[in-house]
Image (tube, one colour):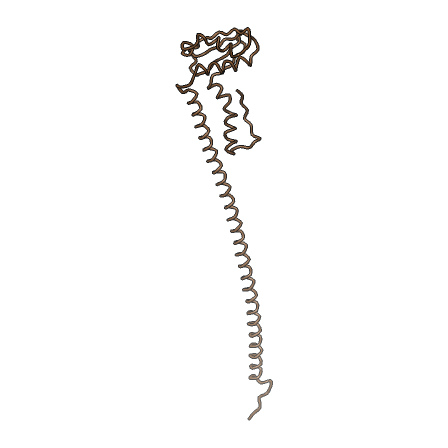
Length: 217
């Protein structure tokens, strides 16, 4: 058997192939390691993106929920206020209807309202304007009845029929015409309504105690 020389082409070729194989194996291993790192980094990045998007989605969902709840609260408040306004208007109209009821004792109403108004005024001379129909029905003895109940003497009252007046009550005017007090029932209602309205709303827990709308008799 003939020994192969170390410098023979066959040996050199085998060494080159072995070195190439080793280099190839090393490159392949490093490539696999690097690929693993890249894949791991990509997976981590993907998970981070998914987590970030999930958090963003949760935040957006929470924000939209708050917006919806706020919108619902505003809408409920608006509907509640609208309903309250309807109810208050119904109360207002019902009071007006009762003050205009045909069975109202207009004679007693005029006396009570006239006495109340005259007691607020100084002086002794007054003109009392009442609806023409009331003047025709019971105007004759009206001045004397009112004067007795006022309890001030001397007191000069002139009852005058006013064709423009229809609502129950009386308009008081001083003799010099400088002071006038409209004490008809509906006029009193309009003066008192802001405070009445506030009290009704307050009792229904619709406004706070600090809210005030004023209104006097």
